[in-house]
Length: 541
Ligand SMILES: Cc1cc2nc3c(=O)[nH]c(=O)nc-3n(C[C@H](O)[C@H](O)[C@H](O)COP(=O)(O)OP(=O)(O)OC[C@H]3O[C@@H](n4cnc5c(N)ncnc54)[C@H](O)[C@@H]3O)c2cc1C
Ligand SMILES: *[C@@H]1O[C@H](CO)[C@@H](O)[C@H](O)[C@H]1NC(C)=O
Ligand SMILES: *[C@@H]1O[C@H](CO)[C@@H](O)[C@H](O)[C@H]1NC(C)=O
Ligand SMILES: *[C@@H]1O[C@H](CO)[C@@H](O)[C@H](O)[C@H]1NC(C)=O
Ligand SMILES: *[C@@H]1O[C@H](CO)[C@@H](O)[C@H](O)[C@H]1NC(C)=O
Ligand SMILES: *[C@@H]1O[C@H](CO)[C@@H](O)[C@H](O)[C@H]1NC(C)=O
Image 1 (spheres, rainbow, N blue to C red):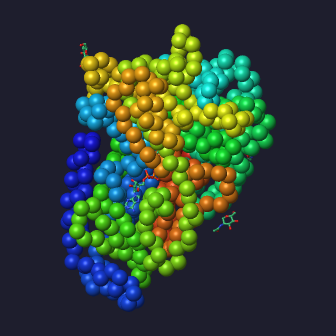
Image 2 (image 1 turned 90 degrees about the horizontal axis):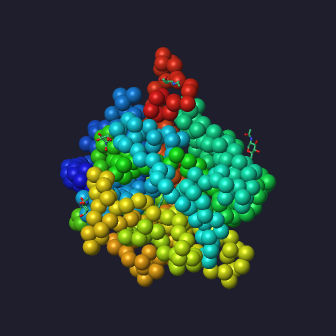
Image 3 (image 1 turned 60 degrees about the vertical axis):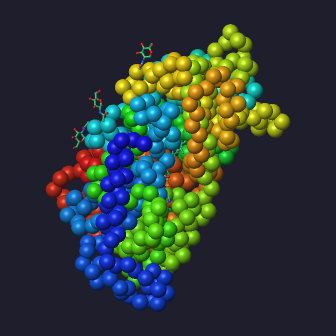
């Protein structure tokens, strides 16, 4: 797919071959059933440096490897890290595709696309790794809010740019956007506390308690609708504009999604992405961590024997299962879709079932600069916005009303060449626009033709995109048992690339303290810790 990734895959496979040809083929079932302490080959194993396994090489797993490498560097630890992913690429839900599968064309984000400056790990990573950011908000755009049969409002600017346009104030008044802005700023002010030395060096194991500490209990315990109502915010604003944001970002309506995630949906001002793909951040995390990478390798089970974890994994196409022992294991994937068998760990608590939003992403190219007027039932002389967000309000008011067929539909500029100039990509050699649609159902080509007229390239992907996020006060466990940690416990709290890097940092901090008497940061007392806005725990220490 990407040139660098391809190289990396090859490297990973070589690594895999080398690492797993060690002479300690463990008689798996036997070792556990017999209760023997030292299965064949373990003495040799003992001499090797301790190892940590990470399952998943998305934002969470790649950053976990990176944070461990920081601790190794600062404490001079001799620890090896194995990083496993079923996919043939690094990045998980953050990945790009090339239009027409042509590597000469500029890639498009298929999963997670944006982050903001207050996402300090992502931001810092782009700077430290020399990755260029593009401003996602830039360019002229119009936004329309579609309720299934009509546009309830159309305005200038993408999501985040519409706070105080005349039309918005006309429809919703001045108070609602201003109060919302204040609430979001206050949430962001609490959020940045997660980067302080205090938060970094005092890892959390209980998200309910963390919510209390950050004053988020109210927000996370109520739906976005309830919370905004309680704050005295004009309800139609919440039901229409806020819902546009929760639907495009999390595929959920304001009466369903908790208000903390609701507010995160709104903190999109100054949204950016990495030129060429956000996955490059995660690739750099892995490269710089020097972890052994095993792509196309699925972890099947994690078992415990004595004080060691035994991991079974299968590399796609290989005849045999791999087996290897670890001092500690980090699960950095949504547990229930990972299909990892934990039944042979001694006391791991149940991880409560966590449904995910099953999202259809449709990418396409079209010579039409805008969606068709007829499709959106507007006059031929009108122009249809190039960003169409949606509200469920019409359906809430009348269950028989037509529901929007999609969550969001957005033009993302022209199809470009790798050098960033418009490509002549259509079959008649003309330029085309790229469009991204999120929906809960598959959108057939016939639907796409009705919406855009002529279409060119079409690419469909179904994701289990983010957790279903109802109001709650209880969360999955972060520490499953001694030496076994679960990063994605954080996702029902907030699900973003950035928060996965924070959750990974927290887990690595716990692991380093509990297993190695170390930390991501060394506090020798000699170097005073900075205490300003630019400080980021883990990077600056
Ligand atoms: C369409 C879409 C749009 C989004 N938009 C944004 C956005 O704009 N901004 C934002 O910040 N976030 C966004 N998100 C959410 C964001 O993608 C996630 O919160 C984040 O990427 C999760 O990272 P992760 O590492 O925890 O999980 P993942 O990225 O899912 O990584 C888990 C990895 O584990 C691997 N794995 C699973 N089981 C096993 C196993 N048994 N053995 C080996 N490997 C295994 C998987 O292959 C996967 O690569 C979006 C998500 C989607 C789908
Ligand atoms: C970032 O942009 C600069 C200036 O355009 C360019 O020289 C550099 O190669 C780019 N870096 C990456 C990683 O794309
Ligand atoms: C987590 O914290 C909450 C509130 O602070 C407490 O009620 C709960 O028992 C804690 N859970 C665990 C598993 O310790
Ligand atoms: C905590 O949050 C509530 C709203 O959820 C707000 O009214 C209150 O002022 C906040 N308290 C502090 C100390 O920030
Ligand atoms: C696209 O076609 C036009 C007209 O033929 C040409 O001038 C232009 O250079 C082409 N663009 C690319 C990127 O090949
Ligand atoms: C913040 O602290 C860092 C690290 O000590 C320092 O380099 C930087 O200049 C400080 N920035 C400001 C704005 O004070």
